[in-house]
Image 1 (cartoon, rainbow over the protein chains, first blue to last red):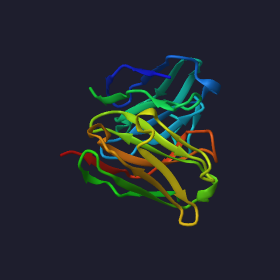
Image 2: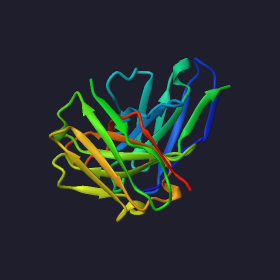
Image 3: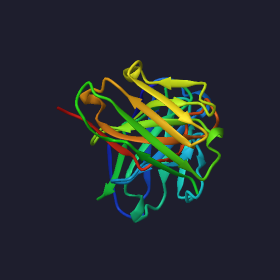
Image 4: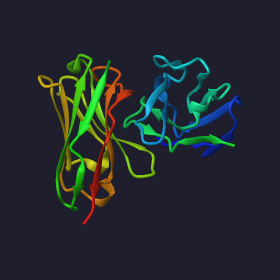
Amino acid sequence: TVLTQSPGTLSLSPGERATLSCRASQSVSSSYLAWYQQKPGQAPSLLIYGASSRATAIPDRFSGSGSGTDFTLTITRLEPEDFALYYCQQYGNSPPTFGPGTKVDFK
Amino acid sequence: EVQLLDSGGGLVQPGGSLRLSCAAFGFTFRSYAMSWVRQAPGRGLEWVSGISGSGDGTYYTDSVKGRFTISRDNSRNTLYLQMDSLRVDDTAIYYCAQEWANVGVPLFVHWGQGTLVTVSS
């Protein structure tokens, strides 16, 4: 399953809303879609699983939605620590695959 | 607190071998499937291989089948990746990752810090 993320880069200011898209080449089984955040020099960390469930200790400004082939990660009111790379990943079809990422950077 | 400590990376010539290790702490290791995920320099993430909690089931991406072998020692809480016949395009940071469940759900809940493998002559 090929995942496509858009936009490639999102230039925003702190306090603004970020909307990131992930589209799958085929339906993702059981909405097994996750989002990860990666900061420079660090490993990725899990944000969202099951398309819309927040991982442990993830603040509620992060939310996920979608089903089938179209999924969205929304960050309301960007904080300075949210400027990072975001990857979607599907784990419903074999093999698990990742999207190419969306970079959220400072405008 | 879950901790995954990756090690074993380094510089190796094309055709050479390396063995990566991942020491796990803070959870019941045998109860969780584990995976290796890699990231080429400046590139995205690619799942490489996974293994069930018992070690009975192993899975590989097509590009490493027949060259890489994943294994685990549940008595030592350690995951391994034996990499043989290495190619230049295997150059990447390799992360070990704890999966969501014992088998069949490759959702990566916790990640190691990564170990860099460079394949170059």
